[in-house]
Length: 579
Image: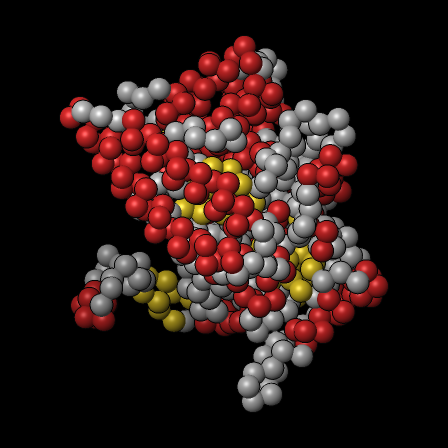
């Protein structure tokens, strides 16, 4: 028999040495041979007979599913993109196998690659260049001719699966993945063999798995080798049916929540418009909160019930409770917080998502008159928009340049266009009420009118929020004259062409300079000195910006969406806001 003393709470070797003979420290006396029953022969001195028997007396997950590690490209920056960076019609979402992907002729395919802690469904935002059976990746070599990529388990590509993030400091979070995706060495995956995939996913997302995994997991990674050795107990038919029902509900709720945001390629329409029942945004917001509060708590109830079932199956009633803290529910992480033990919605975040959708409609990426993406491919025009949205009433911006200025100098001023969008979606008669509601959500303190609060948001914070939402790969680019923000204009990357900068310069920048100069000349007297100085400073900033803009406009810069935001954005350095 061997005695083990728990000294884990002491940091230094000196402390551990001094505390070695302290009888207050927990001692464990057991036969080392018991460790032979734990995969990897891990020394788990706190394990009891029940835990040892679970490992010893049952089959493991490798007997019921195939757990696999995926592709290593050698350079993800070169071969992977966020799906929204490129043109949508270059992505193939429904490939069933490698041969099907070859026959399709497409270049880009979805790729599972880990992501944030999220259960049941989601983290679907990356694509990979796997054209012609991944020819470019398979022939990617360093300067010495040595192959930099590694292709693993290719026969499993595009199959239905469950997936999880390899590296996590939190609990494992497993998600369902439809057919059509490749997986990499970070987005590890499991495939059906002798048991239902959704059942295995529910087991992996349960508290018994986290307990058992703690005996065989090493460090922050959750590797294929860890999961294949987890014990698998065959459930009763009654338990299996109930688990399948609850798990499908969890998948459906998480899928619906994932698709409610622009970051999803299956996004259709903003939630506040979706839940509109009257002409006020406040009512739509309240409807949204009511609906998603119910869904959140349904998911929470399901997870606790699944825990209860699996605790019973594995006989761990003495070790575990089914309770799940609300903070561990992985939907609505952006839109909510847990405050005093209750779910609380962040009104400002939800309103900012509405504003982002409105800007998308101004550019024609979306339309309030038709769900889903509209203009999302390079070179598309308003003619394409009209073909996709017949008899359209809310038209996108004509020239793909929307000024974002401290006054309404132009007819397509962003605040003016936003008001048009509000009128169209919620009615002209409630415009004032809805503007007040939006301003109330955005304003950190009072004192300004609603339109000024909204204008300040567009000038100061919209682009920061856009960068955050689109993970520093913006699709709406803020052209800005600098610190003074004398000139700002948004351009939708997918509608950009080589004439855009020249049009921006002639129709907006120089026109703005002329208007400001005329405005300055009309100011007279000591009382308006500060206004004259401000305008003079803005004009100087515009003139300096014009030098850069003219050079870039004369270069007739072209972009290729396949190169991604990082490469294309760099071509406009000095003109656009920093990422």
